[in-house]
Amino acid sequence: MKLSIKTDYACRAVELMARHYGENQTMHIQEMAVAQGIPENYLVQILTVLRGAGIVKSKRGKEGGYCLARPPGEITFGDVVRAVQGHVLDIPSLGDPNCSEGMKGVWRKIKTSAEQIADNVTFEELVSAAESGSGMFYI
View (tube, rainbow, N blue to C red):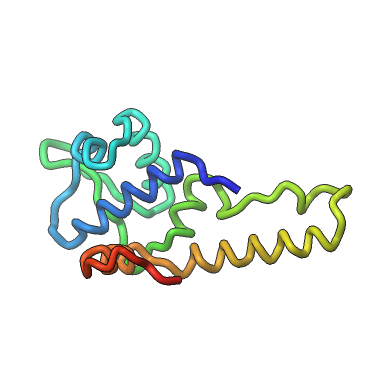
């Protein structure tokens, strides 16, 4: 049960844009890449996926860049994770006929819990927790 680095980078990019939401400005790819330690070429690919999912929008030209397409309170971790990898948690055993029903039941509970957490944490909540200085986010 491991999220891909692409998913991690996508969440970090969305978090950064959430922190700047409402400033009526776009963020340049280079600026985001440096701030989050993400390779620029990889970030371009990630932002293209997020744009296709309606999570970010882009603007061309000198003042161009990327920003959130919706308020951070309307974007969940689940939205971003699904946009990048298609699912919150993939459990191949659920489709394996050799996996016992008891084991599948446990895996289903784990999958459901992970999805509920991802779908109930918004980027607005994450930014608020960071700005309050708590450094902790409770789920």
